[in-house]
Length: 88
Image (cartoon, rainbow, N blue to C red):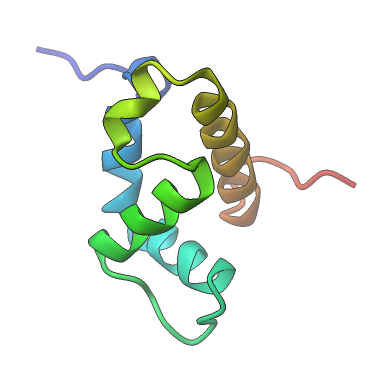
């Protein structure tokens, strides 16, 4: 069985995956004012819920505004991580 590309996964699943990513945990820590730390998986999930203004990652399936916020946060993270070029 082949793996699905990340971008084709439901947003709630994408959110769960990135919260387990040490790079995202570091990004979330820096954005939260903890530049010398890395958040735990739960801390990263709390950061994501705060940014998306949701109570549960499941809300990403139905909340259009949260989906937009999630995509914007992912773009910021991808630029920070060097996955995409930074905007000038």
